Amino acid sequence: MTDTTIGAIDAIEARRTTNLFDPTRGIDDAQIQELVRLATTAPTSFNLQNWRFIAVRTPEAKARLRQLAWDQAKVTDAAVTFIVVGQLADHRVLPERLAPAVAAGFMPAAMVPGWEGAAKSLYHGQPQRQRDEAVRTATFGAGTLVHAAQAMGLGTAPMIGFDAPAVAEAFGLAADELPVLLLAVGHAAPENWPRKPRRPLAQVLSLV
Image (tube, rainbow, N blue to C red):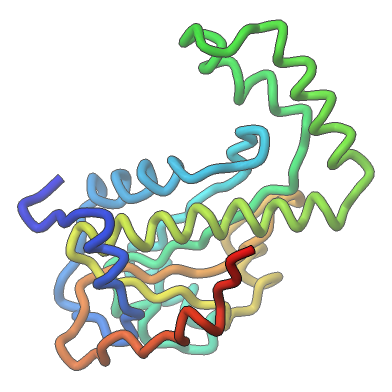
């Protein structure tokens, strides 16, 4: 944590998309690790934690990614651009993923097979549902990372403009992994717009 860290509600209120980054300012690996640690506090179905974050931070790797991302300058201008990866939901990983909760003493070991069976019934042989869960998981993680970065005084830009199959090949994704989005993170240049106004609550909220 740094002196520039702000509260969670303030971070949400202050967040805006950063399209212009200061390419002269970087962030260190410890900050990258903290951002991903915070991102992984986001929820996942059955605690699958079916995500991965590839921190593209070297000039060579950023240039390679930029070629696959429609030549968007923010890929290379940002301090780091994350490839946020979702993994197809797979019930077989649950014993390992739930073991720390059992070791901590709040989840009974006898409960684990039931969770695994429920996940199997939901995902096994359901490729669309597996893929949907991969996208949901990656999106939850990316959203949490966005607000963590804002709280640390950093700007962010989520991107879907990239060649997904080419990114998967170039950065060694497994067959069960999807590059769901790119997320540029760095120091915002002063020329960025403020956050664009949102629709009125009356148009988006129903109280029933």
